[in-house]
Image 1: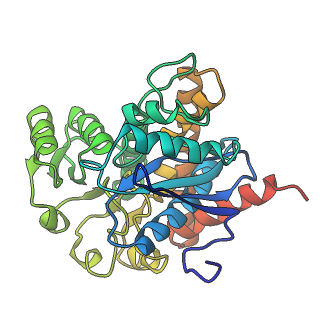
Image 2: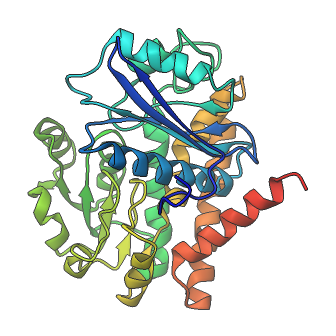
Image 3: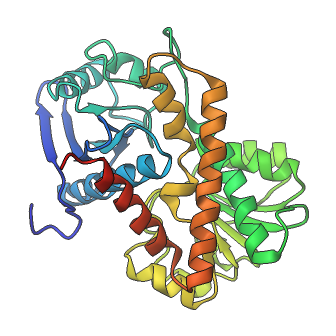
Length: 348
């Protein structure tokens, strides 16, 4: 574990299995320096346990950085459930997952992520109070995806202003990879401003729904990298900016809601060398966790969420400007800032 390439001084990595329900889960707590670790739960049919572990480690570190950059009183954690989200869900499985969370005594709060919806989280909440993203309750915030999408949309405008001299997206050609919860809402924002959209996803139903609302052109998933787009917006899974895909991109901006978009830190340098402006994912996609943080506080306030979102967009602008001024990759600037914020919160 301590030699794992994705291990980053995590405070705890917990493995849970419930034979009766079939639950196999990993909860990784990266840091609680700023407060209890918070991050969603992902259900995915990984090829191997190693793949699940790597995802949990990387995603939990990203949540620490995301919460720090959003200036939230939360640390970073993430849960992954190894299973097929279309065929493997059950009431018993999510009850077992809730008991696993409860056993961590409040060091980790969960919410929705890929493959998990509000109905699933509601079952989890019957076994533990350390849950957010609920549809019901005094401070319920519901699905955080719309707020994530709003933050990504505003982040794309901030990137466009620096890359093209204007944040106006009318007429801009944008390739959107993944049109599920976040990507779908994002397409609505972009289309409303008059952007020309190319969209790709493995879910044909979601594709058609977005196409009918926005007039977007559907592209085969593997062809999305080859479009003549000015902006590439990844909103599916991670590691999609890699040595195979980067040379195919014609875009001048990469900005989307997916986590861990860079396959490795080295890809951040490669992106800069190609003259592409990259919005660090854990900065631009922090809107959802802001929404969740308001619920965790016990008193949800939409005004507080929007104020925090304004600050987050300003922080993204600061990262972009510092990187451009110092001729540094944006991911280095963001990592340095996030680590400094976390370190300043730790007791001496």
